[in-house]
Length: 437
Image 1: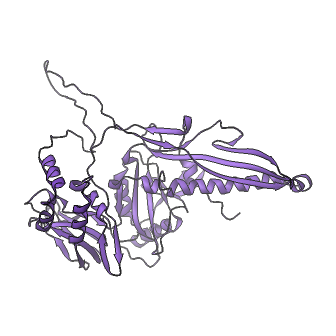
Image 2: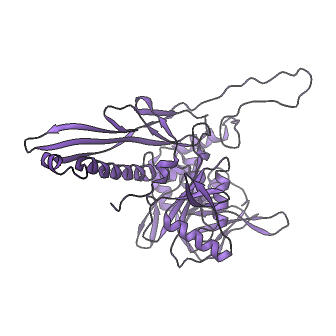
Image 3: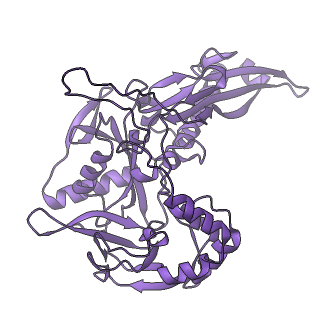
């Protein structure tokens, strides 16, 4: 069976019992900051923003005024930029909101010794200048420069205010923003816990409590099922030298486990590619995955990173970039196998991570385990007719055509306990023709 893979993800994830078929993740209260991504539609070369997607901008989140959002979407102007074009210059007046429909931009800052440095890379779906919606005056704090050919949609401050002034909903929102009390929070956006240290004497100590999210997420176990049918004649006559039922069951379970790993990566509800926090998604600086990119990814999960997970072609692309620079990744032992590693963190292959038609993929980095507040796999052991942990094989009987049926079921899910447990390097070019730095 050629479809059997190493299934490193299933082997590397710590599996936690989900009693009752569900697992609740209680987190400290975090304040929503509207750091989502905007979606667009295209008609030929024309790009338009979907009106409701403007709700990803912090000031417009949950606004509820469909007429205003539709009018604003129609007022955005499309602009094209070539590599190297400067879109915003630090110190100049902020002139509007910019939505990135396509391409990559470098956010440029000033280093300690006055030299330019790339602070971060922005790509399709992200935005900047959204402070213009609530501030009539302001300056760009950093510069933005096109790294590739870019398509941007822009809305000037006056154009926004002309449309928004007619909306009573927006006037109420603006007043709410201006009169909002200060929210005490830590650097991660969580409700702060008041603590004092280094004091002398007998000062009054602050009172505090840990504020939790009011509606914590519950992960329900998903299921992959199939019915294995075997004719009684085969089971009776052809069980030597191999047990036919056992072998067919073995291959059926292999297929279910492959599908299980695929779902853990790609499922839109609990799959890891869709559950990484948007603030933990970064982009390559040049296209192919370079050592610099993996170092940047390590800064996103710097607390006890367990392993990288990448498509085999992405691992090969990383190897080419290392060779191009004269850098050689080390190797580590993982469950008795020698696997490539970067900075001592294993790079495990997973062919379930998609590769797009344009030969781009993603690389994941995660911390695992409940004690480390990382990524965990969920299953339930002790189910009726259990064959393997979390997998049952239930005999369904023999029909009038003398065919035996077995219901094979696998129950599973995955949970990300805190946002900084999982990070993704997106839009990784894996074609052999990609250039390096």
